[in-house]
Length: 299
Image 1 (tube, rainbow, N blue to C red):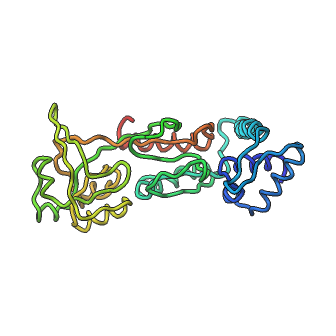
Image 2 (tube, rainbow, N blue to C red):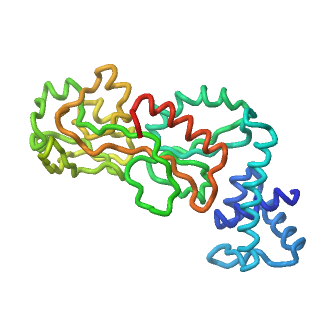
Image 3 (cartoon, helix red, strand yellow):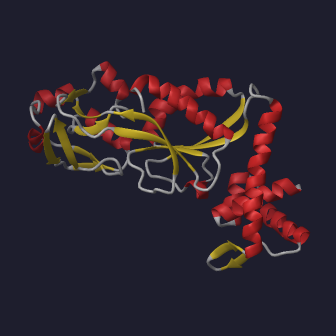
């Protein structure tokens, strides 16, 4: 490894807390990372990392070097982009995290256009309904929905979607159409058991509010499970319009209680804390915001 590559390896070791984590992100073997760090310590004449049974932590010298190295790597990327000019294509690898169903329905269909615009850019997609640790996974930008509970996150709101009560026409024909929120207590609900879901909801109609806790025999921790349960006629659900966009358009599912409002669902682009968002991450975020804005309205 050259000195710049060794600096990148060291920054990733600190970010991930391990040689193996850095090796995975660099797509090289762990011994190569260990050797690069050892050579870097020899060159600088100081110990950069403390190794213990609890993992790796930077020494005081290592922490100082880490902060300067991270800034230097960010400046190198910005300098390369500036040298190529504003019209130059981004290059390298962009690591994006998103929920499985949202990515399948709303990110994947847009990737051909994005990749055509940036032919030198590759994308790694980390798809999980749970929120991944951005630093540990080396994520450049994550698309997350709902309230952000970590105030330290660097985030940008890029779209907003409606929540609604929906089910298949066959289900409502069999069980009846609820006329008011409290009627939902007589229905089987499919409950999304993740952040942004749950059984308790507050419906609003003008100045009136009605709180309802849904009842149901089926819960799922992945949106794909919610979709299949609803489409199989097992019950109704409270969902964002994003989760059932194709079926809402085709009429395979229908919304009810349309005169009542549920809390909208915000979509955020989230960046690793303490790190300047890369030009690649900013370009992807702006692209997604422009496309989703056209479908969901102002964010």
